[in-house]
Length: 202
Image 1 (cartoon, rainbow, N blue to C red):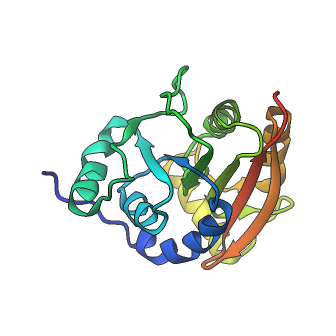
Image 2: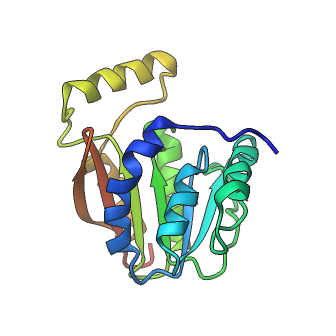
């Protein structure tokens, strides 16, 4: 089995994230996690939310690491990783999904990919279902901290298509798809949890 990949950030942010997910996903039955990365979040949240069937997903190169975490500490409600790239014309079909979660993905995707993620989530979710999107975001066109500005600049140096996304820009893209921003939770280290709610069909 592949050695387990490890992200210190996942260890630091998992408890504050869970505090929000525990409330928002209280009545959820099946969650699709977009961009599961190392798999640490999937294991932790599946354990903490035993009433939820947790479906991690990511591109193929991350599956061995996710499976390593799942094999070492998974529970009955944690499923094998699904192959999902937001650029795929057809996302995998998961029966009963009524909630979506994604962490630290919007700033590493291109803006076009962020828009594809929002459209895909809207197409997947039934009416009233939540989408929780975690990470650093700008508000009203401005950085919320010096560290977020520096992080954005470092992302741009790595890959010009990366960067922090503005909440207003996300709303402009999401609302026509039927995703309405219900709440913004301030979490440690200048991160936010954006809670979207699926409403009408686009």
